[in-house]
Image (tube, rainbow, N blue to C red; front, side, top):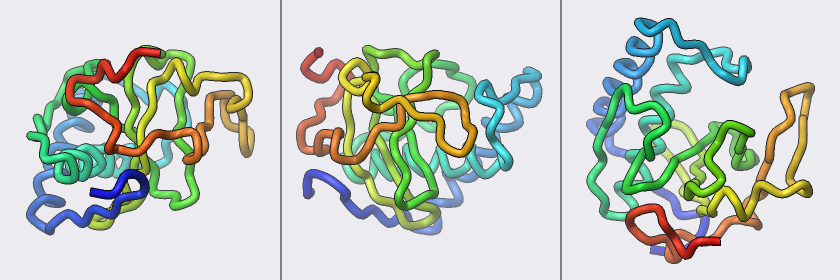
Amino acid sequence: MKGRDVDVRLSWSEVRLASVIGVARRIASLAKGLTDVNGEVSNPWGVDIEGACYELAVCKLMGWWWPATVNTGKAPDVNGHQVRGTTCLGGRLILRGHDDPQAAYIFVVGSAPNYQVVGWELGVRVMRDEFKDAPAGRRTAWFVPRSALRPMTEIEQGGNDGQA
């Protein structure tokens, strides 16, 4: 495994599995009356499906078991870590004020079936004023560039990765 920007291709069976979990997550959110806390999602079904694919891509790369959870709220996504992603190939890791600064965040870009696991970092290390931005009228958040992320070779299982 290379350290940063590692390509991962999911099989179509893996995409199907992640899609089922993404749909289950969307239905659970609808049943609870939950809405996007950031108010910026135009395709919530797609976001939930791609989110599940991001998690599965990380697990495939790292050799971790994917829990495929539904209804877990703020609990870590995989092996004690949060997984964030975007379909925008030039995108940045986005953290918001309600995100846990002590959590480890793994960043993935791409769309089914092709992904790139970019890297990871603890929230507290990247929730800095220099990364605050509000592009295109979006709400202010930390938009973390790839260069600020550590390679996946430096992550440990369990999410408590070398505390800040």
